[in-house]
Image (cartoon, rainbow, N blue to C red; front, side, top):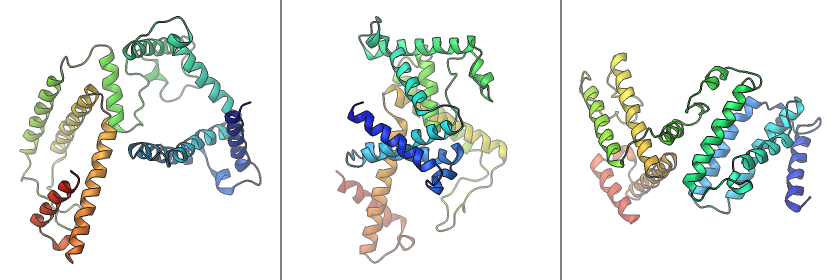
Length: 300
């Protein structure tokens, strides 16, 4: 076994030792359910390191993410369900099976060819599972997975932007898509107008929240109207995700970058007010807006 394999085996052995009698009390107490939040957190930390191009930090974050895989596999091994070897074997089999243009005789000259082959292979795999009686062990999702849907298998547990991206991508692969991106912008205008129409039905125009009082300033809204506004807002988000997909952009990444940009500029605004001996509640909206524009200028 090469050096890489030796290091992987060592990590597997360390994880087993932590879970063994006399190991770490915290690690021994964990279950599949208690580890789930850490898996999500570590995934986002990997994405943040990539967004920041923090190559010094990324190896550590990837290690933390790999730890989650080792943790789940070790717990499953203890319950005699599967082991890390099964995970690796499944992965290798899938990689080879879904890349016949590399490991077989299938031709794929472009990435589009690869994606078409990939979808066809996944569809065939699904049919084979159904013929074999569905997913082993059944479960709540078995009936949904049994349906011959193009959208089957897309988890509703992923972030909503990612789920929308996957749903629209699957539909687009079978031709259910806008012929041109201009149609998407027309659709965005349409959905915006529909939300405006619902907002116009509010008993009074919405106002900014009062300073320092969370939730204050909110207009009481009857549930049917609130549901319609939420529905129209969701439609707007879905169209925006489709625009991102059409432009080969990641909506989740785009929004994260905007969040960081907002945070950076707002904190600059806070610091500048501090230099003037002021705190945020003491500044007028005009003062904050002027500083906000200055913050934008400093980044150009």
